[in-house]
Image (cartoon, rainbow, N blue to C red; front, side):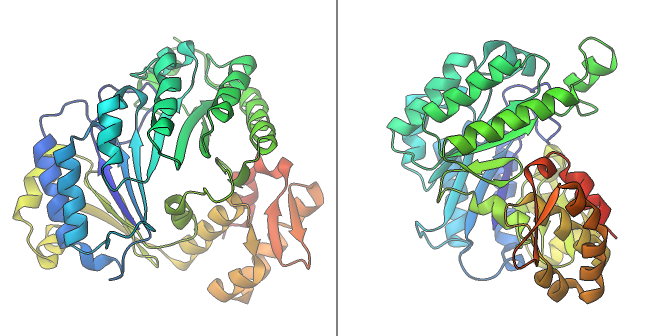
Length: 387
């Protein structure tokens, strides 16, 4: 899988702690460096066409046609992708960018899946989050891209915000399903340090989030979307049949992926994770001097950090991601990957959750899945089974 991080935004959302900049001065340098990184790091993925390409951010919908063409030309020339329509190619977009001209431009590019950062269809929510779009743009963006022929469409929604009443959340869900989107990723608002929202909460300017509201609105989310025909295939992700995100599913099942761009992460599918320097100027400054794998490896901390995963790390991640997915954890698969002793440890440690009703075994008994009650305490169930 291939991920491209586009680290630019029009303005900073109050809750966001991803790497981005509202200063576009480094834009050309970053795009050129992305091209070079794509060329140099090709051997880190298998030689065949990647199953998915994902342009995230930041705000990839800020890119001009010539910038997208430069990136896609490089992806083709470096043989990440052979032009097959079977490859899922997702671009994240903000509603305020999706005017008729931009939608037409995207429709004429290889992008076949859009992920729109709606977050809410409510004006008060959007102001609180400091989103660049308004409620009218949120709804019309979805309507316009559907009319343009994008039939693989995901939207993001946030619940539990200080401004989001239960009535507001119910209306958000109603609008989303009425608009006919086929994938929804929905997250509880998280108060992160070093964000505008984190500062406001820390200084008492706004109250902290409410766990009871989170639980209540998460339950509303499941009820509404399952009732509308969506499958709840990962704790925060819902899809109509045939519309799961292939890219994110690859992350959750331990597939290798290459992340290019400032702040992007990579995983070799086994025991090594790398992350790029989260500094646009440094990224754009160093990459012009990188011409080979040897140059890249030699640059070390100038370009990336690295973590070598222990067997314990890999087991714990397998448990965490496995329980988050609707497929759950197959005890035999766990034993094949990590040994019978680890499988026995898992079964022993989660036994209390079978008794408590937060976990169930699927006949004939080898597959463990969270129950509806268990979804709300998934992290705790997984932590109990960690090494």
